[in-house]
Length: 172
Image 1: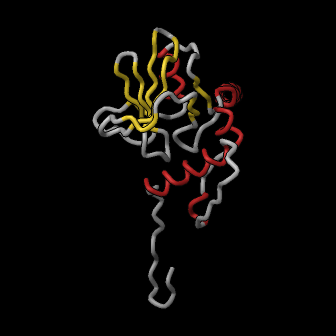
Image 2: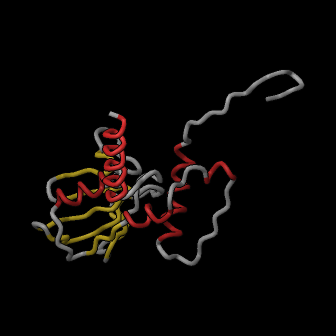
Image 3: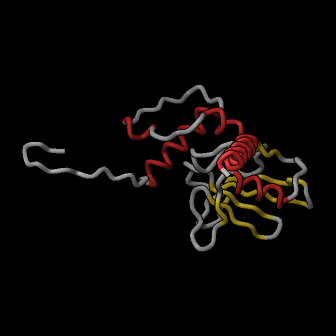
């Protein structure tokens, strides 16, 4: 509100994609154990981060040689709020082409390509998502953090559903 002109300026609650990219990059960098991170931001950049423990607990690592069904991996990614790319392949999305899964982590400009041989993770590479050019080959592992800050564990969802059902019974 500007009292001099008696003008009210409505707050815009939309999320700037660029700021969201930096927020997710900072969060995953801090939680990955790196010791060389300094984050400088305005207060508006730290709104609605959710619980650090939930964000951290949902992260998972894939290593070369791991045995995981491709469909199980895709389900885990969707549980972390990654979307399957349709036309536009950008941060927080994944693409599937046979035994190859490509994922752009939130806060990253590059993608990770996971190549499967059956249910075995055969190879992990970092690629340029637009051209498919390989940036780094034969990586040992990759960590997947949630694509958005607003995540919670399945246990908490189950508990909330149970409490809602109990409340419904009481009210009915």
